[in-house]
Image (cartoon, rainbow, N blue to C red; front, side):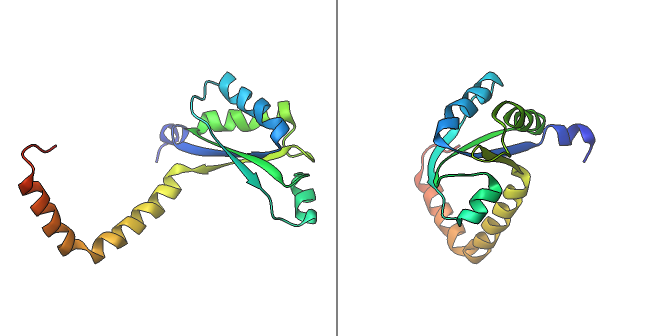
Length: 136
């Protein structure tokens, strides 16, 4: 894979933060022209010691997920650290996961499912296709 392709790889950005910093993190993403964000309410179950190490004070959390090109994700991680002080106590954590890594695992799972039902599914597809007047 060339360096040019690596820059355009998609990443899933995960932000886990306190409810009071959620709006600020969301605003930073909007400023960065990141159009889609998914927000989830969460509740931590980690011990207090682990919460202290990660800088996550209370158990009430908001999880924000967004997909973006790698170079956007790198910029966003820097902004979260510099403007919201992520990584310090009682702020939050942010990390990225390459979409291609997750996709390859999903493809393997789907392939294994397909191998088990190949003949049965093929017959069902033929029957459905013969019943349809128009297909695409």
